[in-house]
Image (tube, rainbow, N blue to C red):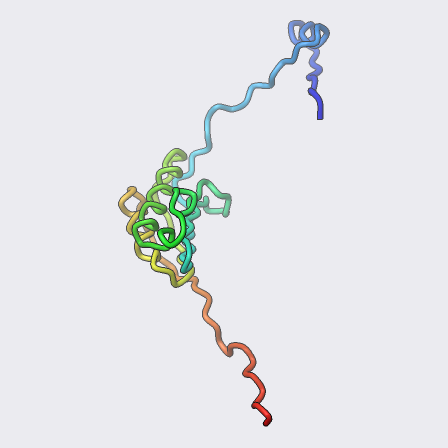
Length: 147
């Protein structure tokens, strides 16, 4: 991949390119401000994952029990889910995030605990929506046994 050179026509930048040194393009130092958004909680039997997004669906922050250092069966505890909710909300606070709709999916032990963690981190919860997939019809039953 090699070094990229910036070719510019102004005096000091052109001389810098000729000398072989690089001129870095200045980046925006300010982050975008997002006040409203959505929070998605996936509570499985083995882990709890919380994702904070803006209203369009762009991810601002996320956290999981494994990401916070919990291993094995401790990942699936309500205590771990509480810390996951707090961690994801505090990361999103850097963007000015303050109010959200919460979408919960799964039947794990961290469902309510993750919501409590979000609330304790100072997020105003507008609505809680359950998106847990429910089977209707189910799988095809097995054929009767022939003896």
